[in-house]
Image (cartoon, rainbow, N blue to C red; front, side, top):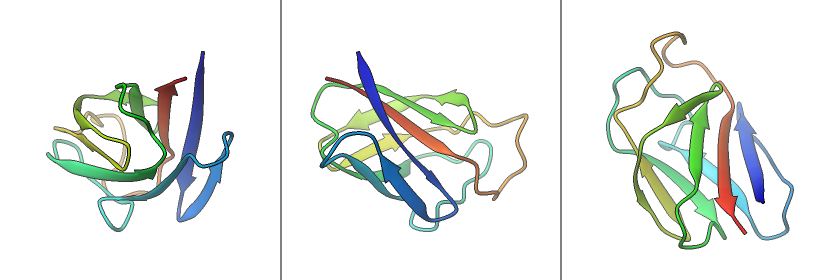
Length: 92
């Protein structure tokens, strides 16, 4: 079973108390191929889950309870620097 949190244009929601995305690369905007994008989170746990940007799975480089690093960003079908939803699925 997984739970998720998403961020769209600076509006944060969560389905599990204590788990939320705080920011993505500081301004929530990234581009195709961008590397080492930091997704700041709260309560992500230490077991690696999955990260999506605009519905596209992203490669996870590191995963901690407070920060997830992804890259290089796979977004060839999306427009760069747009506020697409960031979804983080974590094992529970």
